[in-house]
Image (cartoon, rainbow, N blue to C red; front, side, top):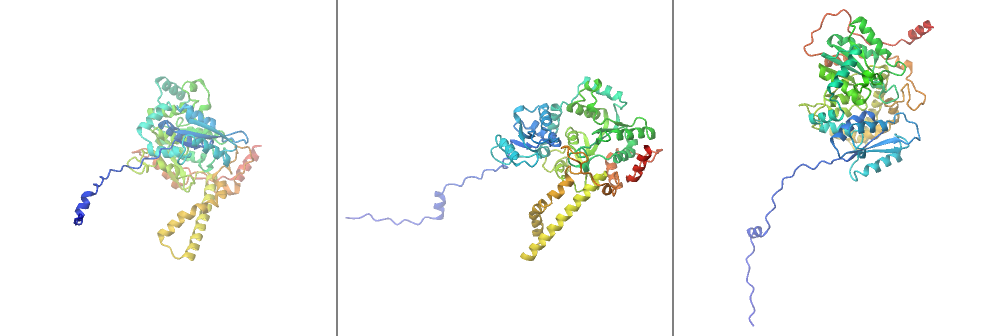
Length: 496
């Protein structure tokens, strides 16, 4: 039987293998990784200063929810503003179904409450990091645009009609305030720190306001002082003193005090809704439309953030070393009208002062600097120990070590630093506890008012373009001053 012989097969060539292999798939163009879109954020019930940025985010993103903590009555907390925050969001057109109130024992330091807030937030976003209170600031840094500005004006009912404009004009005329002109300066007053909130160092200085008014009075048709009326003991009378002094020294109709005008409750104010939050916005928009140049100036606050988001010219003041100073730099114009996160810059730009203008602020700034110096010393000691045990490090390795080690070292100083960044030294406590005032001998080491360097920085912003100095009959430069407690005591004794 003849068997079939196997044919010798020639070895396959590389070319044959290549022909048999499937052709490689063409490389598909890869687009950018889809951006994770948050569905919810958590906001403490005391965070009223953040509510404007959060409101803007809620207005622009109609799928975004907010979970707000609210005290359940177990403890009294006068900083609990959850209801007013919710009202502002509802007034801004945010649906009830996107605003969620969660009751907790305490707004601060309540771990069980934090879990309840997180659980509620997870109903709307099962996976991914839940955004916190800074999300509103971040959103504006990424998304702000003329379109968003116009959307906010509509939701916040800023665009006054003819009737409201006439009502605002009538109210201003009753107060003797100019209703139109070239240059208008609006100085914002803040006293929430002394009233029991955080950041006492950002409260207004009466001496500082007086310094600014005297220095720029000839440059403006009118200067308006608005915002908080004053620390509870004075309730605005010191601003009236400044107004009256300017009337007799500079001009009878130059500076006007309208602090807390919304509490006036007169028919002429109610006619344009001046007692409401949106009504207040209408007043500043009226000024914007009826004066050629309007400038706003004050210490960092949520109210000034609103002015910037509405498109007005704003500068906020902040001292060197401010513990929370980095947050609002997200809105900084880094060039071309853009932020670092590529949104349009709002115009909310910082004037970085060397010192706060108040003696309380200078004291707190000094103490925070001392603690930060301790942190740096501790950090250097730890890095030196590591080098001794593991060998020399390059400059880059040392910088990486600092980044790695600093959070843990800072954490050991949190308690010490909290006294100087919170409400510990507020002369009025919102929880009714006895105040812990800054010792007079400590405050007496510092001057009241802005130093020369900071006044020059402020003047650079406030001075109108092409301004030519005029001959005046008064001295516009008011120096810093010390408060002499002995003289005050003698004066008080002579009064009685």
